[in-house]
Image (tube, rainbow, N blue to C red; front, side):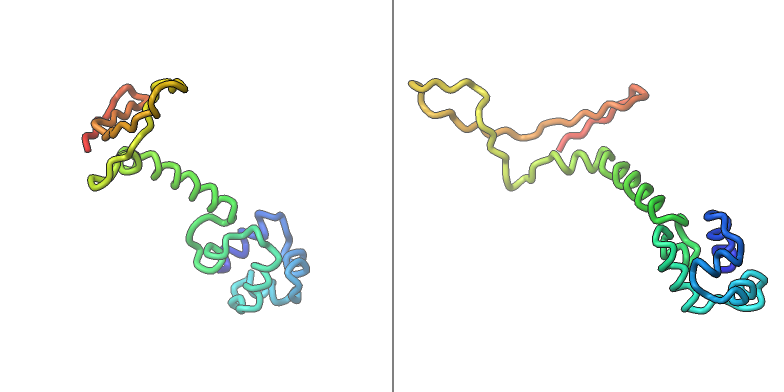
Length: 141
């Protein structure tokens, strides 16, 4: 916890005095924490979380993850994008279930005099994924 509090002060370029003033605790409290004499109380941690809303709370409490919540969200977004474009995820998304074949309207033009457009049943036969390194993968449901 001591190192995380030091990192917070460093990130926002706050002296121990300025940090104490910002989180509204007495200056000796921060001084004793930063020298290792005392451990931060729950009240101090809560005040840090309150006065630095951009901090990742999990990082503040456990030291795990990124310091800033915005970095966590960006990392999760990138991770989610990576998960969503994996070949198996794509194949799952576009493969119709075996019990139900999707019905798709015919793409033929409709004339007013002709009969209503017919419904054509189509099933997925093959999925090809091409990568930037010129490799590819083939999926057959």
